[in-house]
Image (tube, rainbow, N blue to C red):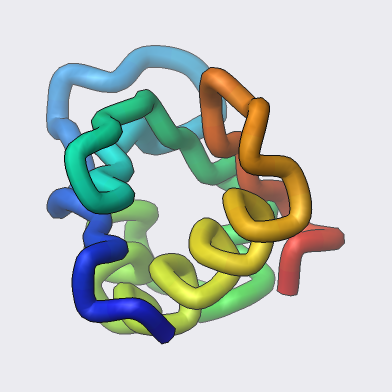
Length: 83
């Protein structure tokens, strides 16, 4: 994976059944989000924020793959099928 591709930590002010984060791909920044069901699947029984931290690199990898497959996307949206 490219070192210029990063994601931020989860944003705690997110509402709804997802957590938001920011994707940085070189000089491009775009919003990202991951569904609560994906986080529950990644780490059953954990709180969403704890699951995000525990699976940070897997989430980063999934976001990277989505961005590379679809470079025109204006938002990265991950769900259970992303893993």
